[in-house]
Image 1 (tube, rainbow, N blue to C red):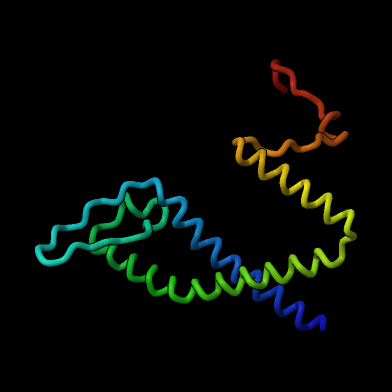
Image 2: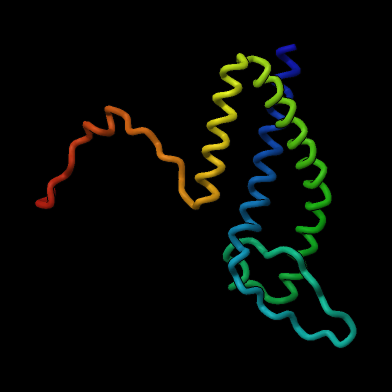
Amino acid sequence: MNVRVSCARKIVGATIAVLTLAGTLQLQAADEKPAKPAAKPTAKIDRRGPIPVYYGRVVAPDQKESIYAIQDKYQAQIAPLAAQIKALMAQRDKEIEAVLTPEQLTKVAALKKEAASKAAAGKKPAAKKTEAAAEKPVKSAGGN
């Protein structure tokens, strides 16, 4: 049983790393304005995703097309893995919830609801200050 769990953790970890990298690259490049591709008289190119961060400023239009083709190739492999990760995470969460008592489940549900309401209001949940952070010395303006 431990071997299965260990293998599943490794697979999930590797898949999460791949998906995180792919998602990060797409999210970070979302704000970049894509350069207009060279005009083609017969076909209009409709690209759905941005190219990786910082590439938009240095690559030529033909290189962008190559990058889009590479992204499309890997997206076909990433999509099923993303679905598998989602299913594994749901299964993991159910197993974790099975460990908790009904009172703990109620508290967790309340905490999730509180966090969701704060997120909807645009606020981050407040973190509790630890004693160590409270006792941290403050540097003087004179500098050392």
